[in-house]
Amino acid sequence: MLHTLAHLRVGVTAPVRKLQLPEREAEWLRAVGLFEGVEVTPLRFAPLGGPMHLRTSTGAELAIDLELARAVEVDAP
Image 1 (cartoon, rainbow, N blue to C red):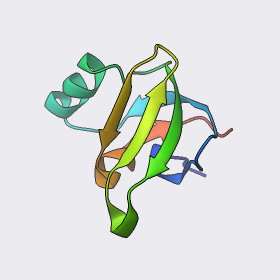
Image 2 (cartoon, rainbow, N blue to C red):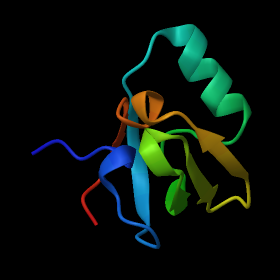
Image 3 (cartoon, rainbow, N blue to C red):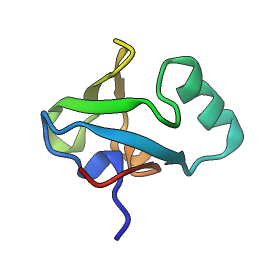
Image 4 (tube, rainbow, N blue to C red):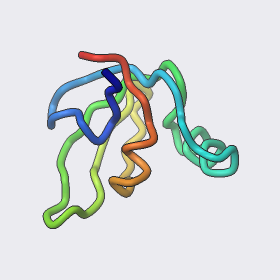
């Protein structure tokens, strides 16, 4: 079963396995701190399908669109 960042519950930490994105988008995520091997923890989801706010194990905090979160493969917690 494929697990993505969008499927994690708030407060559940999991390592990023793979960015299933075009290289330009993957490079942007890596530049802002979301890359293979880093652990991610969702902090909150905006209502009505809005973006998710997350924290990485390197201390980065960012908000990303749920469609983008569905393209970030994580290891099952």
